[in-house]
Image (cartoon, rainbow, N blue to C red):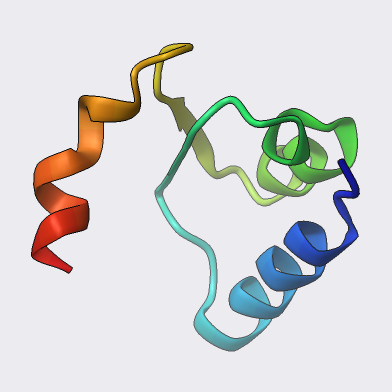
Length: 65
């Protein structure tokens, strides 16, 4: 998978809104890429990832939104 759109969105979000304390995501290859993770690490953003195959972890919140 191409990471460029995710990297671009992350950089734009940090530029517009500042850094986060924690970034939560799944383990998709676009989010585990060195480029994406490097941005989080350089900005001292803690990384939280859902377990593999744990798509139900955020069902309640995702339905709420």
